Image 1 (tube, rainbow, N blue to C red):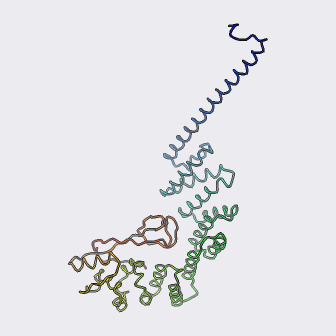
Image 2 (image 1 turned 60 degrees about the horizontal axis):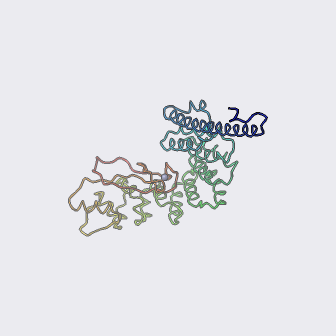
Image 3 (image 1 turned 180 degrees about the vertical axis):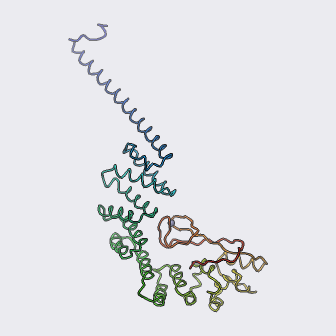
Length: 349
Ligand SMILES: [Zn+2]
């Protein structure tokens, strides 16, 4: 053994000790690193498992915060919000935000929290979150946009208009938002007559800044019979559900009979008699129904659903703002031919 190891007074002995220490340190570091990685992995798995099986908003404080969990947990919070589990999503966002000090690292989490509060109907809390973000980062256009939505839903149209000024400065097109707020402000006014409102809406129809469907719907609500004079039959497909569900007593047959498109719609509805000549509406489902009626089929009706052209979500109820993504005037009508039921007792007005 003495021949293998250098003796303590040999200069090689010091070199030998240094080599042993370096090797020992490397092995210990490697083992510690592997242990930490394994611990993190197990911690994430166990945490996600717990979330799946408990109302985590009550258990969040018991779980240690780890920076490596921020990304998977923010994804989880987002999918919980998509599934309508707002309470759990909000609890998770709050947990992450509470433990992250640097604003730039948690700005996107605050935005998501503001949107989740909005979807869950906590409008004041949503407002507070977006104001907080804008206090720190005034050029955050996404937060400005959602703050506008919040004020719009709160009926605070003047405040909503204030958000458009910085949005325009940031280069965001606010024309659609501005038109929408003008329309909402007009409809809310109580100090002008419905006749004056009607005339102002007719003026809105002369510009493409306003949604045709929105304006016509309000015209029908204010004065159904007067509205017929302002119907553009080439845009009938945009209001097919409104026209289809109007009570018979609200129809203006003089105007309808002068338009092949409108005539076809009410022939399909079996209100006007079928004509020998081929009258086309260029609305596929209406032309199919008229042909079927001529072939002897009857007992047909139409049902409607509404697709958001932006997020592709479908709703059974008509909307001005998509209830999912809050896009404005993104609605597309989907018609289905159904079996006629007992007489309907509702309209969209
Ligand atoms: Zn949408």
